[in-house]
Length: 253
Ligand code: G
Ligand code: G
Ligand code: MN
Ligand code: NA
Image (cartoon, rainbow, N blue to C red; front, side, top):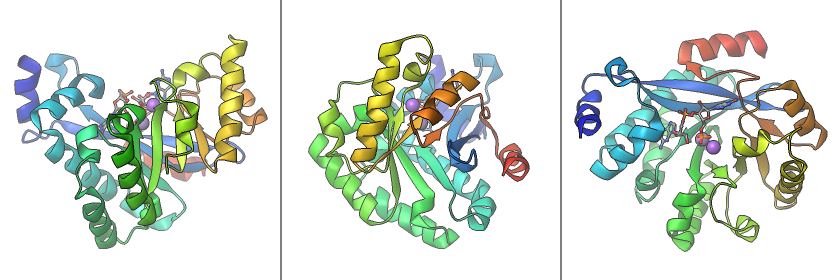
């Protein structure tokens, strides 16, 4: 497999880079933090997206060095901003094998300590698919991370098979609502009802909803009206290199 072979060399060749997308507080329109998104600069292959290469990295085990690189690089690039703004959170996507690594929590706490960042400034995003592979163990690991003060988010919520009842058992701070729901705003009343109910339910369970993929002012107005606390999307800012994110932050906040 061509992609697989190229992927193996990509780390040594320094072909990976990180993009960051701001996460916005909808009451103030100030930044709450940023999500780190892995990119592969490989024009010959059409710059494959993480949806294409993360599964291959998972299979081969490359995800461990690659995932560790992402964590270290993101904390380095955002270090200055995070130290200045201790309320900001850096959100990192974790693939299943990264999450199931029992050493993850201790390693992260050590890195945070070395960099003098607060555990609350690191947010780990796992998908419901990851958690559902072994719900009881997932809850135990999430509880350990949470007790250490690390922030947690359930990504891609509403795309899998978990029931709403499961949400109350998951020790996560935030739930990221898949952009497919947001696209229904102004188009599909049932989608709007689901968003409204989920924001309310999450709040009652002590969690915050992050609406993903906000692209229009109509979507923003709806989310503000129902009291959705957080959002991200092209309407606010596209994913951008670390230096651009810092400039964006100084301009907008
Ligand atoms: O940025 P983009 O829309 O192409 O991301 C597509 C998918 O890849 C998203 O589901 C996102 O969560 C995932 N993704 C992006 N960066 C990373 C990463 O560093 N690690 C993992 N595991 N997934 C990532
Ligand atoms: O699954 P996850 O939420 O981690 O994936 C985030 C992905 O969504 C990123 O790859 C990012 O490029 C993409 N994204 C971010 N904002 C928007 C948006 O407003 N519209 C669309 N279509 N995609 C977005
Ligand atoms: Mn994500
Ligand atoms: Na998502």
